[in-house]
Length: 450
Ligand code: TRP
Image 1 (cartoon, rainbow, N blue to C red):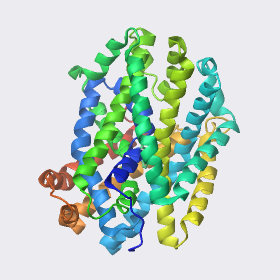
Image 2: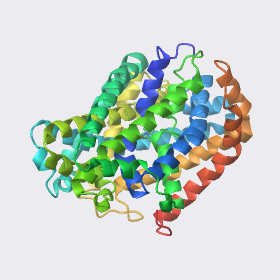
Image 3: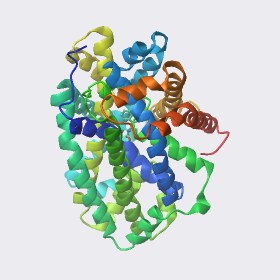
Image 4: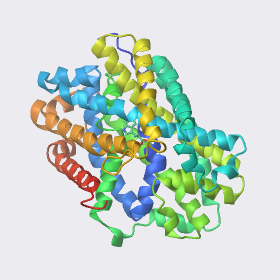
């Protein structure tokens, strides 16, 4: 495997991995979770998890990728013949996320195009969102466009496709995010929102908030899905892993917090500080925000810019998901990149169709009271992700031993947090992951409320 592609620089790798991490999770999910679980308190718990737990698992995955220079299935197998199945789970999860992630990506393109073509007022009307996502054909059309955009980048390979796209999209994303956040700050009444978002209210502490922060941390850092292993396999043997991971985490948490600054003060200003408006949950971005923009003036510009930045964030994440699947197909079936990419793109479009129709003509089909898209989200993130993460911790802590990983890390730089790392991976991480797994399954069966 000496001819495996590599990122041309550490910066290229960090931007690509940060691109994977920064996605709908940061901009769409983080603000509504923070709003729901006590603002600053949630942010604080979240950051604590990112720097301890997230740090550990991300170090492991990138080190496994770089050590073996293989995509997930081959990588686990190379470390221990019996454990290739962890790689299979991880790759399958990435492959299953891509279709429904693309459905939401398609919604984002639709909103962007609508704002661009002077439809700002229409997006603020009651029923716009529901009417759109329940239509049979249109959302599938936008979803396909989203997959094709992703495909166009992945087709060009690691250096010319993924790295180049990340080097353009990520800096633009940061600039646009700062712009929208400043706009949101400038609105009358926004300061109350900023305070709510930043000042921890310890009276709102709950186990649910802790579990939600933990789940969000995994999701947001794209962990346990083979993606970081795949990107790690393209990383040069000389690059400092610890520094890279810190930078990726800083990027990810930074954009999540900026997203909170974009959304929460604007919604506060709009609703006059009424917390109920913030509890819109998943609809916060597609339903509440357009209404907010519409009342604030300059709605076409701000709305357009906002959905463009969300689109960039979603695209770089989808690129990493597609790349994980494509590199697995290339390695396992010895196919060319082009053939693998065509297969993955076409099947992703087809597999996404039920997730799209589940919001409309197939809405009668429900499992555990979830529509198809929510069901896919649940199976991948609430079940397979923790299972994959737990298996990885056990594998590293007790099967191959932490030394294999720490040696790989130390082959290119000193490992300052080695002790924390070892304790985390062997003891603390597995317990926390089991807690997420049990709680999300109990909540799906309605036994607890999360
Ligand atoms: N991290 C992405 C986000 O915040 C979502 C995600 C979860 C993801 N797992 C992934 C993206 C795996 C790419 C690969 O939106």
